[in-house]
Length: 357
Ligand code: IPM
Ligand code: MG
Image (cartoon, rainbow, N blue to C red; front, side, top):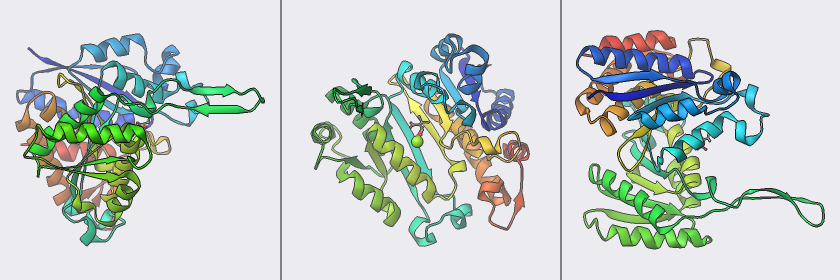
């Protein structure tokens, strides 16, 4: 039976980049990929059309889908809305409603783009790490939370950092299974010198590691991990960490590659269903100008084929096609460093299409 894919282009450059990814999916349909593709509104554009950043219809289609491809959400226009109506809320609700607890954020340095990194080539050449970020718990979702007035009339903001053993266990298992297909090394990042949550995190990680004797598990405090990522990033293979630490460290890891426009991500549920998105944002200043890099979104389709649709053959085809356009010297503005041919969003999508077998 055809697998169901839902496209959620969203805001800013989202529609342009998802259009390119759609072209690739359509081409694969012609060569035997059996998928049914739908599309819906999400984020600011959904708020404008229906008063909610995640309309019920969109949520239902996402629940019915095997895989969701999301462009990006957010923009200045919606910055002053109450938290519950903000475009970002749609993303957080989708993660939570679809139980996408395991967020895979690879950071790979394409050898063709080594000069795009702000770090010295010897520090980043050959970089290939995977951040496994817990995505549906921790301080992002912990209760109680809010802003309240104290007896003295001063306001007080508060959030709750909380993880249960089962939440820690499942994200560790996810990381260990991924490490098995890589070099077998996992570094768990926490703040166990200060936080009780992290002490529990470390204990559970060590216990679960007992089931994976082939995996080498190490631990690192998050402040040191931030430093090590820019000092000697190649020491890492798989990093597993909590929601907020993963949010921060994955942006750092992305910039090691010099090109946030190149990096895809996958957010997976226990049953293998998932949401796939480029890790860059909606870049409202660039929207509608045919300047955005569609490669992260196209590579997100490759991750979708690999992790949810189990079509490694097609995933490989896309990844080879992207490598081939880089070899041919094609660059969008964000990765252009003076040589090669600069292309717009649409032309880059066409170049990938042309490089498919
Ligand atoms: C990310 C983003 C989101 C997050 C925002 C947009 C809610 O920064 O996916 O990393 O903090 O998770
Ligand atoms: Mg982030």
